[in-house]
Image 1 (cartoon, rainbow, N blue to C red):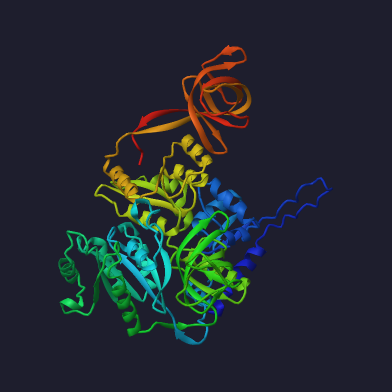
Image 2 (cartoon, one colour):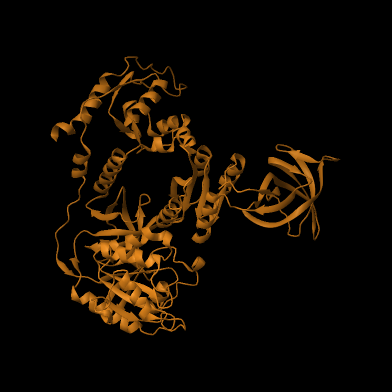
Length: 627
């Protein structure tokens, strides 16, 4: 292994000797901006090299190299892996010859071994049980949790679906228990699976009037895979159509036999809405937990799992962590997956700032250097430097392990070729969401909609607002952008209009899935869409009456036509919509005015218009949706 580790050093030394002998000219005076940078004429490359390593070999900054790749139709970041052929072709354009190196570089296995983090020693003690609530959509999981923790989280949920994983801690008697609420829609299967992986007990909610449904079966599979004991909560026993025995019989057919039918699984009949049977359920949870008391290391450096992540405008990346072992404290340096950071603040399930979190405590952590992924493991490190080094090595390892490089997956020409795949038509999609869990769920739901002759392909997915970069990628891939619980930046909307890219945003996942499915089947109805024709910056107000305004300004984008509708926008907010009565250039009435020219116009609109406002001219037209 030692021989392999010297491989990269040997490559660097070899590449150093291959540098051009052309001397760098000395600057004659201070007016000379920069000396010529010496580039190698020949470099030795392995089968795969990431962008950062290649930039170092050719004496170029990573940012410059990313730009060079982009100019050649390759979208990549500093950690993206380039195969030998791709790198060699790009270097040839820069008059640098690349030869294939036969020297061994440290293997993936060696690198993986080096970045393993040892589990610290510490005192073993009892910890609160972690209970995951699962079940079919609308079977009452969130209402049940509401009854348990006496607080309402249902009213603000779009479409009645829990859109984010929530983790809460309640006391059953004097014993704290942590509850993880998993979303109910079938598209969130992956999020339910994450919940099962970090749980001690699964409470499976089944509606007495509905019985076993597809998601009920999925939840059973997740619980069995996690080897977690089940507690069945037969909910909605108060409704007129309730048939608890029928529901339990269907559970038996699905492989879950409750005690009343001769099995060993505990079941309790409840009405989450009325609050009946809740005490009995809690008693069964406590009894189940006491049969095998959960234990873990209660001191030393913390270990935990990411339950959910989100991007906060003021705080940056925020992760909900379920601590498994040790103590997580404010000020701790940590590594999560390929990200590192330092705990700036900890917030518990009540929203209170705390200084320390122990085993089975759910906390929001602020201080990540970048977005982590749900399911990533958190490990506290001795120093920020140590955490950063581990994160960087993990990123490098992940790049080397990839079956194909990011450059291959997101190359402009390559994506264009994906429009057809043999005889199968393909709908390419860019997915953006407010959390990693939502992005994964939407992506998995879309991929699951394949038909015999057409299938959906997610070319890129990410967390956050729809940006110009997303539009550029969608333009290259001839893709549509789907946003879930996010908006598109105004500049991204404008670029999308210019490039003919469709951006669709949703807050309810049913609607998103339904529209994609209709698109795949060719059944989408034409939409009435709004086209922005031009924008004008208001420079002067000449007359302001109740419903009529005469203003002057300069057209900054597109054109303003007399036949178009207009709206007044102030600081990104639309004040009102109206129409153009007259449009003038100097003293002449004109049908339209193009960008770069000043004009005056009379518009029928009620709110007061101020200097600095923007007037957008637009029209509507019917289009067959492109998704």
